[in-house]
Length: 210
Image 1 (cartoon, helix red, strand yellow):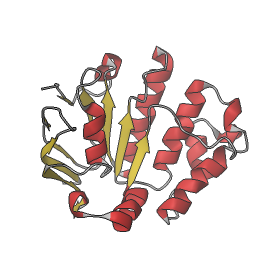
Image 2 (image 1 turned 90 degrees about the vertical axis):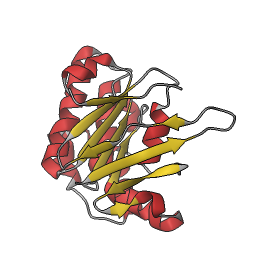
Image 3 (image 1 turned 120 degrees about the vertical axis):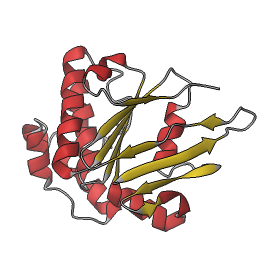
């Protein structure tokens, strides 16, 4: 099993504990985490990424127990093995498209994928030297996906990647994520309240607020 989360529990200060369903994925498999706004979906994503430490339970990726890691070792592991697609692209405006992807290699201390080839696969081959400020919303989201894939991660986490996209771009983004996960043998977890995505990924778990 490439990825497993077991018995995860987390409490925000002054709030009732969130208890999450277990997830297990083989290379190339994908799952949706569905739930309404405020249900705890982003909390779960942060637990899976090692950005939050659970009160109970554990997260394993490639045989490594993420929840047992601390500090610099955890940061380096995340940079190498986990690609995160945020709801907003969060691209560095002072860098062009290719340089934004090269930053992922730098922070992950990993050679990763050939950036020019990756951009070409995502339909961005002509944008490598473009300012990120000139990109359309759909293009910026694809660059964000390319950045998450740059280090050939074992786990791809996508937080509401389609919430601001129209139907056509939603289909393109989900297809890209699924195709790339299969290509690099990664587990793919998409956190969303966008019901349109269910038609592309039938495997899902639901997060329900206590």
